[in-house]
Length: 113
Image 1 (cartoon, rainbow, N blue to C red):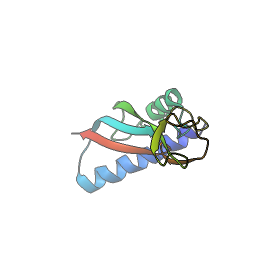
Image 2: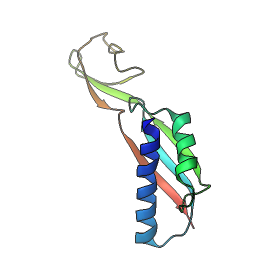
Image 3: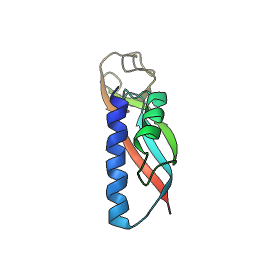
């Protein structure tokens, strides 16, 4: 389950930011997760709750924001949104696509005390 290691990485960022900015508690953490990131959101939510115990983010609300998958279509030269990485271009039906986004995961923001 790589979601556990993702949660551990988030904890490290939270703890680093708490030291750097002097806050004691995170009440809400918002993550942006791309459609192609390969993250199982229920597993990440579970791992987040477990890994954050004893950290400034213990008990924090986790909000996951979906980002679309995007690709550049070489046939119509448009950047298009894709539901699945292997889908054809929704504009022209072409199959020559270069992923342009949707594989990222990042902390958008945190509400802190």
